[in-house]
Image (cartoon, rainbow, N blue to C red; front, side):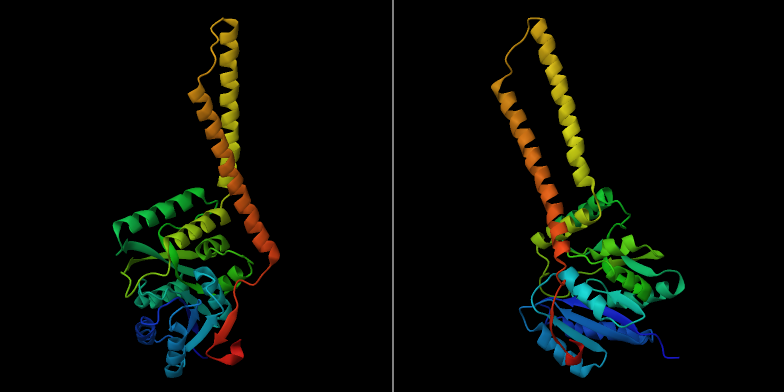
Length: 312
């Protein structure tokens, strides 16, 4: 029987100068482990020559399959396209910046063979600035607190999965996917593997602060109703406070101690309650917008070009 095929999905964004080194390290790690594999490179609308480089590398290495999206649809969309295009019995996801070491992939696959359906990376250390490390740490713990399912701390999309897990994840028609959350929600046997995350090999990350905020909001809104519950809890607390304050006014009225409330406290209360109303209206509007996105049933992304034209 032929050895099983392993698919390694890499979302690519403006990484022209990194790709050759990425291919070398992935190839060396998989060849050393004697694992048959394909490398699925998905160019997410890069503004540099990333897809030109992908085509060049695909001419040198038969294991490379490249796809260029028609524009920048985002990291999670690019990974989703890679999952759909993958052919392997086992599938791994790794970013293009070499912060997640490709040499860990065989260890992930071994864990999937032996004891699990999913092996995900748990970051022990991040070789990044202290502010960025603090924000990431805060994000994962906030997400864990908000989420209605258990999403492991300090984990990203770096993982290996069996084909049944990939098929299950692809059954969800998410307009704004949060793949590490979907992976956790799908269940199956999952095991975490610790590793140290390296510094970015070269250049700057394509993930801006704004994109990180969007990803965080997607994670929270996709797997928690707590923001909506907070609106209810805040309303109940405000009602209790209002009733208590009304009782205070009535008692002082009968006792002859009634005084007109101060202007400053009145303005504060009105402003505070108005702000809370606007915040929670915004939260509900965001949930409705996500429902609208799903109801449109638009494709998550379009593939404009491939290294093998028959795959379009």
